[in-house]
Every structure is written in C-alpha cells, then in structure tokens.
Length: 283
Ligand code: GUN
Image (cartoon, rainbow, N blue to C red):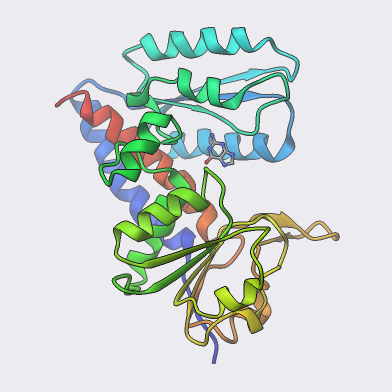
C-alpha cells in the first residue's frame, strides 16, 4: 500500500487565494494589513524563513516591514523597536524570528510584543488563552497541521494522536489543539522510553523533533496519518523531514512530504493570523 499525499503547496494555494480576497476587501476599506518581521543575526535557515514570510506577504497583498539587526546588537535596541511597532496603528502583526543570539532572553522579547499583535501566538497571555480553549492567535505551524488534517478529512474525535517533540513552537501547542479536537494525546520527547511503542499506537503521528528521518516505517501503525514537521538536511545537503518518507509511505494511509508539506502551511497561517488581526481593528 502507498499512502495518499497531503500536499501542503496545493492546500496553501487554495487558502492563499481566499486570503488575497480578504486582503483586497480590507484595502478597499482603507486598511492595508501589515506584518513586521524582526531578524537578528545571520543564521542562514532563519534568513530563508524570513525571506519566505516577506515574499508570502507580497504575493497575498499584505504590506511587510523587515528589520534586520547584526548578531551582536544590544537587546535594548530590539526592545525599543518592538515598542515602536506596538504603538504603530498601521502594523497588525509583529514577529521576532527565533532562535535569538545568546545575549537575548527570548521570553523577555516575546513578552514585549503586544499580545494583540503577537501573530506567532508565543506571548504568555496567548499561550494561556490557547490552553483555556479560547485562542487569540494559534501558533502557525500547529495551526497549519490542523488545517491539513481538516482538508484530508482525517477523523480527529477519539483518535490516538502521538506527538514526538515538546517545543513551545510546535509540540506543546499541537497537543493543546488536538486535545481541543477530542483526540487522546500523547507527547513524546528525547527522554521517552521505547518511542516506537508509542508511535505504533498512533492514528495520527506528528513528528516535530528536528532529527533527520528518525521515524521509520516500522514505527508507524498501518493506515495512520503521518505529519512531518521536521526540516533537516542530510549529510549530502538534501532537505528531509523527521520521517523516513520512503519506508513510511508504504505503511501510512496519509502522509505529508518534505519539502511541500507542513512548511508552506506555516507561512499561510502566519498570513491568516495577520489578516485576522487587521480585520479585528474594524470590530
Ligand atoms: N523559528 C522557527 N519557527 C518559528 C516560528 O514559527 N516563529 C518564529 N518567530 N520563529 C521561528
């Protein structure tokens, strides 16, 4: 059996068409939705992500502001810029690309962003709202995963969902969202004993660990839905996920590829959150 592919590019293209219509409607009412992105340092992967975020804005009719600082910048400079963006009524979303250099306390930076402009959903107030089942902004990657599961008509109610990875960006919010959809949720991590015991029980398996091809076909329940959040490079420099696609696709029922799976959805959901934020200014 070969799994059906959940195509993130195709789902994204459909969603972005709808977003472009919403952006145009806002513009007609005199509001240009705007996302401000702050990048500190020269991490090549972060630079690519930020470039793609800005390009996504342009293609969908959103304005973007990109502020780039050298790795050695004084955190006070970045915090002052965030305060400026918080106070600017023409800015609807603010995102600081992570990770930040060593001299930064990431929590302090994330807490400095006005919660009503925190389109990443990383501010403690927004994390709390998500936990209470009343989210203001859903973190973009897990939000994208939920949209893909919906488009794939995956049954969530009562399903066994296993998440591998417990990060604040993906694993933890993913667990909250699947719980809200009435899945039975297990979160595994680097200290979990017998990882395969857990993954083999999963109707829905979300891999978000950042280790190239660590989930192999023998760790997957036949017919399961496998969502690969990982973006890694093989020693030969090829892009690959946390799932070994070749062996996994022979066992899974539905699977996301890397590239072309969750990646494009993350940016689409960032655009969604920014538009939503701009629309709220009318309410
Ligand atoms: N670094 C990796 N993923 C993300 C993300 O979703 N948002 C931000 N701000 N930084 C990241």
